[in-house]
Length: 504
Image (tube, rainbow, N blue to C red; front, side, top):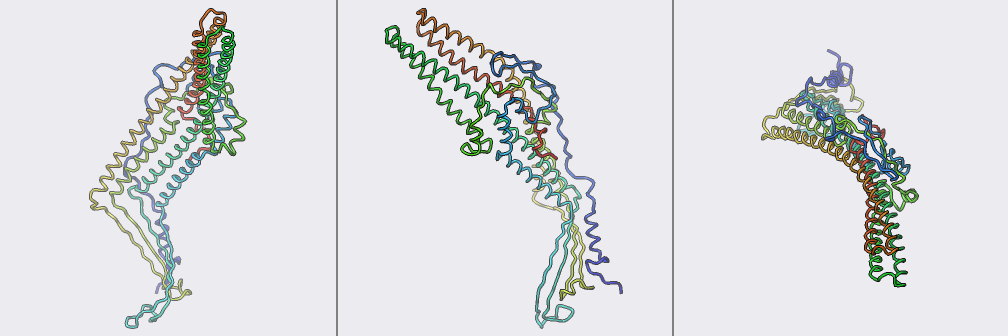
């Protein structure tokens, strides 16, 4: 007689089966289309005309001329170009503490773990079990064990192995789709970084603008208050009419009424910055922020602005890359749908022992094993699989159009910002000239009115014109800072240069 073996001895075929299953190569091909990365748009610029240096305005904060440098890389910390330590601190603090950043990081980890889950299907599935029972059979029947006992114990340890060869690439396409989704989440994290940093910078600039408007309004209130006092004195002496005094008091009231809304907006900006930083205005954020004041004069306008090539923009914009990975996932899902219509194969094996005593579990002659394979062929499912494939193809077309829309939006954003920067420079120049002219006109109107050469209506009109010119100047200054920040965001925000965004 030949040598008896247990399922776990060197003579058993079971270990060799496990090794063979684990070493089975993947099929040479996977059904469905292979993803092709879209080509960049065949354009060489963003605007109809060439880029030129913007106009400059002297003796005004934010009045520097700006030039555009083609192909210069976007720095990952682009906000540092404004040369504000308070702004740098606030942005970096926000990137570390904002809950949206932490949520995006967790979503990325979820997607990456899902990829690893699906990759587990490339390997055999191995399980083990152990059962112990005590049984008694009817004496009217034949005894179950060879020992002819009607009352016996049974100990059964065994191992199960199954393997599904990826013959038509079903699992490979599934992994491909999940990997694309994980990349989507990585670009979503990059987009969250850019959006947060842009929102913090925009909020800080808006605060600076509001402070400048408040200062201008207080200046106008003082000017009008002084005029009211002058008119009251002249009225008491009979040199001014009650109508003139009432008109000036109304002017003072109108200017004063513009101050509370500005103070409310400033308080709301402080609340917004606290929320963006992930802190509370009444707690950890308050102590630091109470010592900080964002002023337009404390911000330096970047004078050399990088402009990426159009072919680089589609690689830099996170929203475009998200749309590209969505297209990639849709392409892989077509392969999944096709593979689901084809046969699937399963190879399985199990081995173990069955003994009446624990000491006999690995004795010769008590082992058993099974090897087998099965084929599942979808024959008829009411057309469901065919329509799933057609749905996947339609989803790919949808994703392709969404990608195209994302590219068009990206180019529109850059073009809009470049045009805005040029117009902002001209608007600031005009606003500065208007403010100087209005201030000169007001000074002349005051002197002429006091000398009796003009009526009070001319002075009142000059005051109103100066008030509007002063506010317009502040808003024009803020627009230059805001649209400069918007250009960095439109070009992708330099996320690829940051080490705190996960990369494969």
